[in-house]
Image (cartoon, rainbow, N blue to C red; front, side):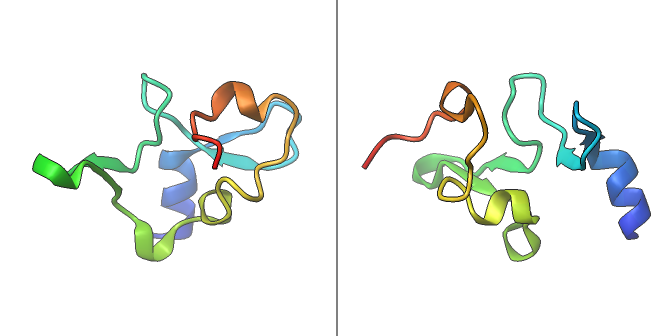
Length: 75
């Protein structure tokens, strides 16, 4: 898939028009999370080529209200 096609199909413009973000599933989950069944649970379908937005999660997520949208468990 070309970069242009990926952007058109899987991203949205941020509200401040300062960049792009991945679109979400209707549930709010990442569109690239896949059910693996059994004990494998959920996994990233694009692990090898994850975008910057995902690579740093949750350590680089630092935007107002991120705790409201992130369900990560504090360590």
